[in-house]
Amino acid sequence: MKLVQFKHYLQQTDLDMAYFCHPDPALTYFTQFYPSQAVLLVGAAKTTLFLSKLDKKPSLKNINIMPMERDWQHQIKSASVQKIGINKNALTIRQGEDLRKIFPRARLIDVSQEIIHARKEKTVSELRKISKACQITSSTFNAVVQELRKKSFQTEQDVAFFMEKTIKEHDAGIAFPTIVAMGKNAAIPHHKTSSAKLGKGFLLLDFGACYRQYCADMTRVVYLGVPDKEEKQMYGLLLEAQQTALNSIKEGKPFHELDAVVRKKLGNYSSYFIHSLGHGIGLEVHEAPRFFDEQERIQKNVPFTIEPGIYFPGKFGLRIEDTVLFNGKTQVLTTAPKELICIK
Image 1 (cartoon, helix red, strand yellow):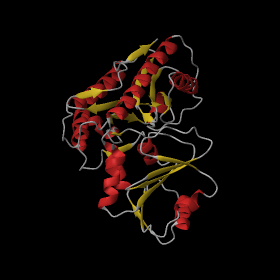
Image 2 (cartoon, helix red, strand yellow; image 1 turned 135 degrees about the vertical axis):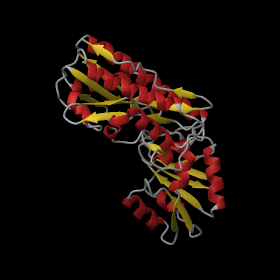
Image 3 (spheres, one colour; image 1 turned 90 degrees about the horizontal axis):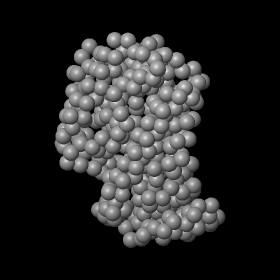
Image 4 (tube, helix red, strand yellow; image 1 turned 45 degrees about the vertical axis):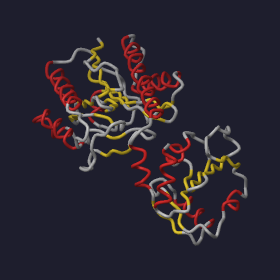
């Protein structure tokens, strides 16, 4: 259990406890529970979750659950607490001020790097949730293609609404705001889905389900109408570049080497690839490993994305993205088709 390992870390570093507040992903990571309001105190001997009465009380092994009453802060005050671990990446200024009021003499020690390191490698249970999120994401793409063939949508927003509705019908949430980008809008990698009308050209769909708090991330491109020779060549080149990266995955290989392989494959078009090749994924859609960190390497049971893209301002943009896992062999968890689907 990761909680047991983290308790060992507290002992080794002489920390009296660690303090996590909702919506810190570390709270969900250690409890596998997503409350509306909560504080988690992890001590070497005891772990306590203070929970709002508005939340259903979960059944948690080796974690004491206490109601978040008005005086809950008085229950944890202790003069003997000298060093408290905090996740600086998630603790708000207000939460930090509240903590200092409870423990005015304690030193607050940042444990964010330990949390990042612990969350990278996923457990079997976490991987099942990510795989399920990827299945839902892939089936949603197949459903939206069917509706596009029926001419069911008028705008980008119509497409996004259908996709998010379909994901929710599978008992899942939305991992991040769905990107639907028509034509030249897709040349902006983080285009905000708009009321733009669908028309002839590339339609980019970047979306993901979130199942039991674990995320999927996938991008597919379809063509509305009939693409010309150059458009087919551009898409074919990008698909080859992504497959080259997938074929190059090996345990211990630095992520920046995968990035270099893709840019080499893109040749003269590599200057149009303006972002990182991918990112880690889990409780958050963007988490460690970070591809720009030259120390980061491919490890077993550490899922990540591979998402090369090329963008031509004022014309169109292309991106092909999959959620991937290496566990001795490469598994592409998002299984929706990648050949260019043309909808006439």
